[in-house]
Amino acid sequence: MTHTSLPFPDGFLWGASTAAHQIEGNNVNSDWWRKEHDPAAGIHEPSLDACDSYHRWEQDMDLLAHLGFTDYRFSVEWARVEPAPGAFSRAEIAHYRRMVDGALARGLRPMVTLHHFTVPQWFEDRGGWTADGAVELFARYVEHCAPIIADGVRHVCTINEPNMIAVMAGLAKRGEQGFPPAGLPFPDEETTHAVIAAHHAAVKAVRAANPDIQVGWTIANQVYQALPGAEEVTAAYRHPREDVFIEAARGDDFLGVQSYTRTKIGPDGPVPAPQDAERTLTQWEYYPAAVGHALRHTADVIGRDMPLIVTENGIATGDDSRRVDYYTGALAAVAAAIEDGIDVRGYLAWSALDNYEWGSYAATFGLIAVDRVTFERTPRPSAAWLGGLGRTRELPRDAS
Ligand code: BGC
Image (tube, rainbow, N blue to C red; front, side, top):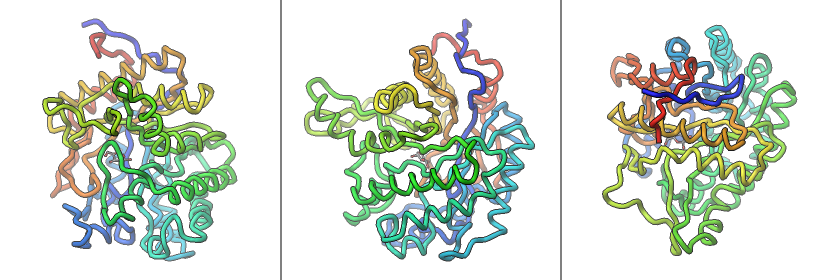
């Protein structure tokens, strides 16, 4: 088979991503844990032990390093670090510092996310992001994360998918809960302003910890595609859900791009994919080219001088050969974007492990399968293949 060399620049980040609540287990002080045990919230399945990565993180890192990855994105759990307002746990800070050291010792560069969807219950109880003082409280938490990130961490993400946070806040205000469907309902504007302010405050706190850290945030990109005649409707639809958050990254060191599928927009809004379109376990349309569109759109909005990192991209499937095909198509799209001059500095797959998908374990995104009872980890063939690409950088040429 003929191959094409992936045009990755030196120092390219090559890794996999996770998030604390989705893999650690027993994140009992978080808002999500409470929701998961509230029948009114209608959450299908609670996270419980998740992948028990709180105890098994060394094994996770061993596997990732062994598979050939050079970068690992994981998150720090605010609900553990600050279990009560102003009470910071030295032991939990030391735990996350050990993870940073453990990654470095294995040759994995840690990318640390400081907030990935969950907040402490006390923060939610006082009104969440839009309450008075919320931004200052987040900044104070970030300041207390200095011992975790100040030394040896090159990349820090302040807030994961702020646009999804604003969308989920909008849903909650309308009495709905949970993880929103692709396409996305309208985001709550007050939350949008609050998370942007929180991000800017967090960037300052991270730079105060160490000015050499590359700091940014990561945006969920829906790859809105206009049907003929719906170009203006699409731009108007996209702006509050995506572009506002991309624009707020001006002045950051990098911008994280996360995408999974596309959403077509017609004159009346989102148009579902045809009945016979291939769908993944999240019911999203199988569309590996999404990440290429996401990178190009992000560069168009923020400008080509902003370094971009694909901080999440992947597929929930029970058929690992579809996972390989998905990543093959996605990486071809990343390569084409780089060849067209877009400054892409890294690619981190979602996800390292079969994790808690915000309400259920059914949608398996993992490069590594996790037994729900024994927590045994089994890398899928896609994991060795993708990890190995970091070394060979040779992608099958018929990728599309
Ligand atoms: C989130 C992850 C989630 C993934 C797949 C992203 O929106 O950052 O937490 O698991 O998509 O649904």
